[in-house]
Image (cartoon, rainbow, N blue to C red; front, side):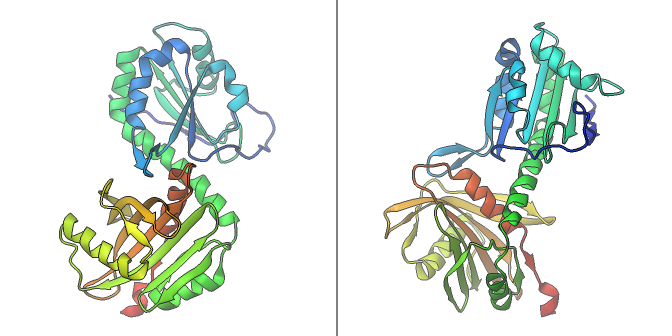
Amino acid sequence: MQKNIIFITILLFLGCSTLPRSQGEDNQVVIFASPEDKLQIQPFMDMVFEKVIRTPQREPDINITWQDPWEIEQYKYRPNLIIISLDHPSDSTGDRLLHRFEAKQSQIENIFIAEDVFAQNQQVVSIHAQDAIHFQQIMDENGPWLKDEINRSINKNVWSHIQEKGENIALQDSLHNQFNISAFIQEDYKLISQFNNFLWVGRGYPYRWITFTSIMESDFSTVKNAWKSISASYKSTMPDINLINILRSEEIILVNDQKIRIMRGVYEHLESNTGGPFVIYLFDGHVENEVILVGGFVNNPGREKASLLRQLELTIQKIKFNRGNNE
């Protein structure tokens, strides 16, 4: 099935040119579907958004909320909306809501994205299928793309909110002078620890820490050896932090078109008897056999942590290595 996608940046419903800013959690997606359609489509949407983060509790990477179509007025300013309708079984509420979108288009598509519909910095996705089998086909083909688009929208808003908090020029200069790395560090971050090959910055409750560590001549050839090298490094630089050897995972992602290895897990803070999730990015250093570990740690006992970890990961993903200065 050919993928038919329309990107729309025009106002569909409101006549005025000034829109309010989107409201609500950045990592929440509100899905509108009739009760009849929801029974048919929810299993396929659950598979699209199945990723969870161990914090150590299981937290969804993206929070999904289902609402009835007639409740859209209550949620229309949320940053991420998905409207789904099936022709069969027939129902009036979901179909009518979707047709309000389709009436604004020159042609009917199975899936399209509208931006800034009810609010600024908002993404609205519409999915139209004949029945559950057709919907499954659409998701089989477009599910990964849809998730990427939702993540792109979430990250855009999260990064905007991070930058609004202002920057800590002193810490950014310290990082640049020590590691020749440029990064955006929020104004409310403070220096926690710094020596030779290590820098640790963070902010208060809910606690978020970012660490930078330069390692030379360590073995990262296998997952087992990588964890051994990482654990040894953090034991010497952060002795009160224990990287627990359960709930660990590894993945490869693209950062600035480069494949970057990521190690995930949970830690315990021995002094406070608390802990939370961590992520460590493994970057090639400036010189041969150097690896720079950039870690993010979240401590928010009894509360959600996955969204805070996303903030740290965006900060890490946007750092720049000033490699030209070493050549």
